[in-house]
Length: 82
Image (cartoon, rainbow, N blue to C red):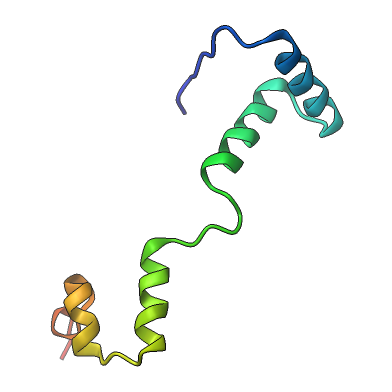
């Protein structure tokens, strides 16, 4: 895991994070990790691939049509063990 140093944090922000960490029963470091994780990976986020696949299902694309968008998962590239 990487180390991150943040300089020049305003005192009121530092205090607020310390209070938040105490309220959540976490260390300051654990609270910051949670804040960063929530900021970059929000719970409701939709991944681009999932969104595109849902569009494909909605317009009822065939497997061959879907293969144009994802050639690595096309039926032609599926392993056969015959």
